[in-house]
Length: 167
Image (cartoon, rainbow, N blue to C red; front, side, top):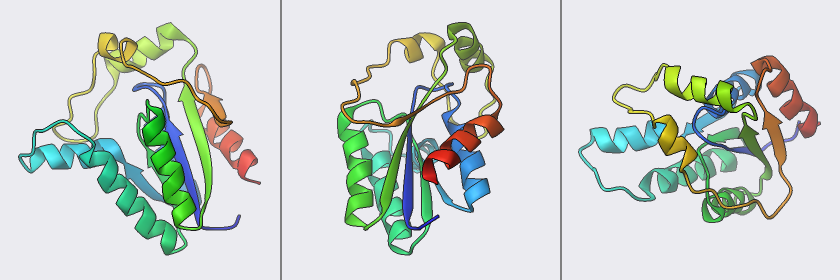
C-alpha cells in the first residue's frame, strides 16, 4: 500500500464511523484525526462558539501528517459537500491519495439503539439525541465513494471491505 493516504470517513453519529476509524487506524498504524476529540478540546478551552474550527484544525493536522508520508484516517460527520471537498483538497495539496468512505447503518432500529445506548469515550462530550441525528442536514454525494453499511456486520468485515478497496 503506497503512502501517503487519506481515508476520509463520513456518516451520521451512531453509524459506526468512529469504531471503523479506530479499527482502521490500529490496523494500518495510521494517524486518527477525530473531529469529536478536537471539538471537545476546543470547548474545554472555554471556546463555545459553534463553527468550523474543529474541522479546520483537523485539516491542518491531517495535512501535516500526510506530508510526512503517513496514512491518515479522518473521522467526522462530514454532512455537507464543502467539508467533504475540503478533506479531498487536503489530500490533493499534500500529494496523497484519498479514499472517501460513507459509513451508514441501514437498519433504523439498530442505528437508533446505537445512538441511545452509546458510551462516550471523550470526557465532556455530549452525544446527540436520536431526534438530532434524524434531523441532521446532509448534502447528497456528487462523486463516487465507498459506502460501508455497518448494520448487522462485524467491524472486522467492515475493515476488510475498506482494505480491499485500497488494494
